[in-house]
Image 1: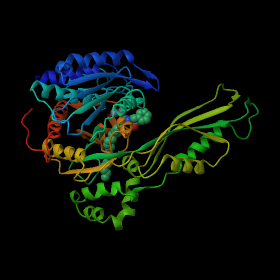
Image 2: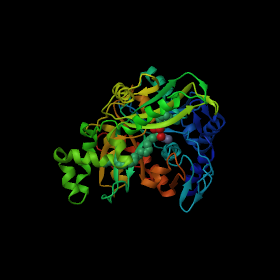
Image 3: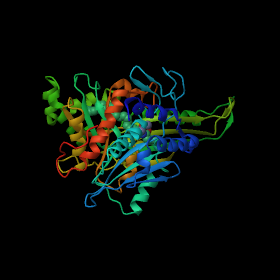
Image 4: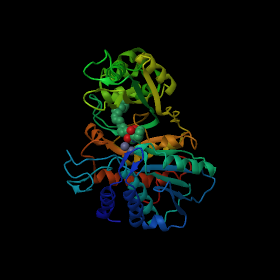
Length: 458
Ligand SMILES: CC/C=C\C/C=C\C/C=C\C/C=C\C/C=C\C/C=C\CCC(=O)N[C@@H](Cc1ccccc1)C(=O)O
Ligand SMILES: [Zn+2]
Ligand SMILES: [Zn+2]
């Protein structure tokens, strides 16, 4: 595959608007087209005898790559083909054009997460074209509804594999990146492999009051009561959980990369922990790493300008810190609202998943670490951390204790804002490096102990 056709396949993928609009609103025509598309651009993957392909939940794809050594426990690579909506406004180029310009491929899904879908399949296609036969079996699971919770894709694939008795050595999904420019004093990029992610609660608050004529309003309306309740929640931060461990571990690994005096502060968190945890609260991204966040995302009330509204509803999206549980957060919420007229309805809730191992015996973590060192030799630090978003991997905790969320890409604050925002784009070089990373990773997963230089070069 030459360089042009390598990026051309991404352009084609971005062009298909596989948008997940809302809980049951998917572009099924585009999802079906996407299935045909990957078939047409990765013919070797689909015709190789030891690669089995199944469609799950109508539009998700499960590939089983049968390795030659059944004594090795299989692993799984995850990605998703659906994207969040992208209205044209504010984009430099139309979001579904997939236009390649100035060394970048532009469009919705270029970072989240069609890059991974295409890079995984492209790496496999290239390995197969070079007659590579993996020793260790692996699965590739491509969900189609990650952006609306993964109930028909990831959840069904997980149940199917469980029914087949599959247990996995580890899973690699989207999530964290090689972070560049997020911390003011830290000029060097560092790779964070997320070993857990936030839990999540979608909570509906509802107030019912007697409706009536707006010319003689009661002292309080459903809107006023609800607005006060959600405002109290927004103004009352959840407890800072910095002391609980994982983030401390991340910062300690980063410490020696900082100039004086930050290096001393981060190396002595037993003393400076309270100071650091307060500093983390000041920035909205680092704040998400130390606490359960509260986001007021929907508000609905009123039927007519001159009618006192009978019902007011608000939805709040909490991202639960790994050191807390859904139950603990719900208790805190009820105490903060402290108004019996406000009803609570939990629409969905999931506890944070367990923290995956990152020690020397943790195969998935060590393979990622070694492949990062090989493909990104300029990156000095690889550390375990927390993913602030939710991923399809949360549906697979029944299959393995080793779940790692890492995209082999650089991410700076501007590209971070483009994910679910505007002007999402990936450089051609970054995409090619992602393919190279997966190409090497699959071969490294076949080595017995420490990955050694592999036979097939890209
Ligand atoms: C010392 C500190 C170390 C590092 C921190 C510094 C900065 C952290 C900076 C950036 C964070 C990096 C990556 C996070 C980027 C994206 C989030 C990852 C994946 C999210 C995928 C996603 O969007 N999932 C949805 C899933 C969902 C769908 C519908 C309803 C609920 C959930 C989501 O989370 O919303
Ligand atoms: Zn995603
Ligand atoms: Zn997303």
